[in-house]
Image (cartoon, rainbow, N blue to C red; front, top):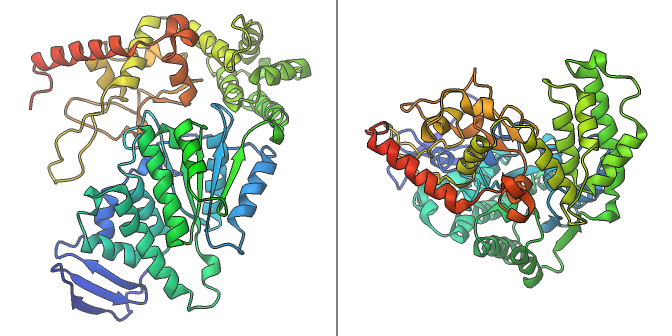
Length: 495
């Protein structure tokens, strides 16, 4: 924190503000008291941070699992013989990419190595496209690298319209130029560069809308590393979708890119088995009905069966545990029910996961209402509302809030929570006693309903996999149009 007794020179700034000169460098403050960092803060997606409250109970590696992968990545990040580099971690749905990246981000954050992160999400406002990507990373760099902060502040003050420019120009103005300037200055101070926060994490690139945008992001990051030599290590995790795969193969990254595929080479079965034993032990110690759980539960055969069904997919293991650990049910009976499931769909890649999802949905009381709610979550457009009275950032319509969904779909108060009550293993459903939304109060989306894994979206939108639980986007859009028209005609949302 700035020492209140420290001398400071105040000089006029070209934008009409004032430049504060101190040991931390120049920081421009406008006459309204708003700095460039203040402006930047209004252009970010806080939910994309690795430690965001929006990512409640984020996936992370359990102790003593994925150790070879984590060690490999950390060795790469901490290689003092290289100034920059890029790594692409890829694998199929449910292979544990996000858990690995989340663990690495937290580990580096605790050691001062994390410069910034952005976790894309298909269903979360502000995280499904590239709009806030560069501003969010730049803001975190300003927090994690005090020596860079004045240059980022100055960049925003000098060009307040930078956020309306291309993603490439934002990268250059907000990240590349400030880093290059600060790094050059630090190189003159022996021993300081070694402490430089150097890792930027981008998770779920395939969740960013549009293959052309995905290619574009890979291209401009590659160009910044190779031709601008920015002193960062960039870790990207995604599914091996063709646009992303082809982009990493197309650009001249051979000397700077490492790829890490999450396949059988890293023995996922052994880690999944360790995960099952650890989490079942936790259930036996903490579940409200733990008194009725036999000490011999589960058996080694039970664990082996679950590991075989997981087929290397950590999302299968995670969903099983969440399902069995439901506080309203007996864990022994829940596990027995799962083990009785028979896979009649053959050896398709996600056959066992699909069986698990169908079993979870079979437990709901009103399937039609559940699918209507999920359809609205998946396909309702997050249209911006009017700006706040103070001229703040536009707020998205809160389609993930239970009360808003109830009004939109003409449901009774409490219907959403009741309908989704048995789906806590695949959804995050907020406690109705702590969350409510009225037509005059719009909240952030941090406390809304969230789908816990993108594989559920893939399941629900594929008729061949979901069967009677398939959600037809055309029908959903038609219902939403009718619902919006009805609500508008009723005058419920009139200004």
